[in-house]
Length: 139
Image (cartoon, rainbow, N blue to C red; front, side, top):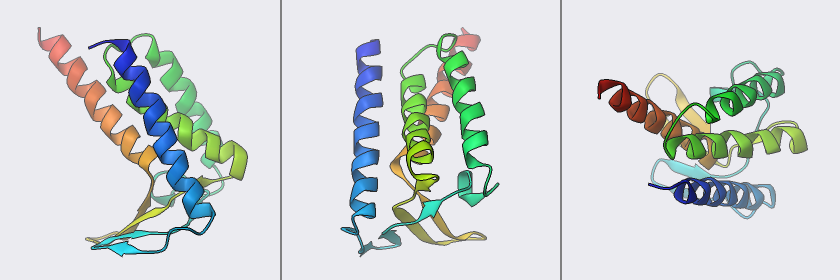
């Protein structure tokens, strides 16, 4: 695969994430599809609203670590991971928190989970990078 695909995934993921967040901020969402609800929530913490008040600091360190790893990790997964981190960092700098327009209800132990497309990109990108690195090391 080429880095063109990686850049395409990064840019299209950020555009999708920011577009959904814009609709949430404009109060144009507010419906449910099964266990998933669409709406608006400003998360001032990090993953699952942990470390409230320290989100910008934690995100900044994480983003710097990703930039360092960007040059050492191969494959398109790093673009997906970086795109998700970048989109959430933009929210933190611009809004003081991350917009979470999606809610998954009925999650065992957690109850409700608030998230956004960028969070899914970070998870998918991390899994992709780990998979690529494990296969690279196994060769």
